[in-house]
Amino acid sequence: MKIEEQAIEQIIKLEPTLCRTPEGNPGYDLYEKDSSGKPIRWIEVKSMTGSLANRPVGLSRVQFEYARERGPAYWLYVVEHATDLAQSRILRIQDPVAHARTFTFDRGWIEIARSEPPA
Image 1 (tube, one colour):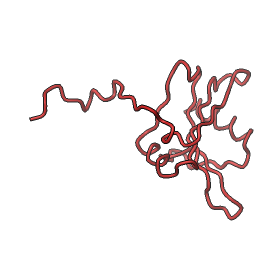
Image 2 (cartoon, rainbow, N blue to C red):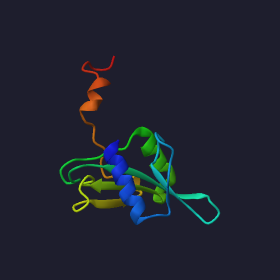
Image 3 (cartoon, rainbow, N blue to C red):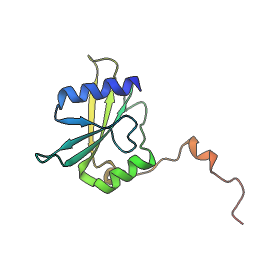
Image 4 (cartoon, rainbow, N blue to C red):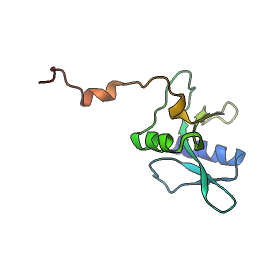
């Protein structure tokens, strides 16, 4: 969580109109409001000490649903090298669900996988 906090601080310095959500908000970390105070953009932040080229990031089911429902108004911000300000880079991905070409099923799926054929 500390690395994510550093990433969020970096983002807010660059985009000061963004607002934080309460800690533990399940679908996104930041949002932008219009002049009337209505949310118009939602942002999920993923942070890492390395590069996206070397390690993937994922969205939780709730984050994925928020992204799907909000379409182009939902952004995924990936902060690479978040603990090193000299190397840090923010990758901004608009509407990540619409741009996904595949969905990866990793070792976490073993818990619900069946080894026997269906009856």
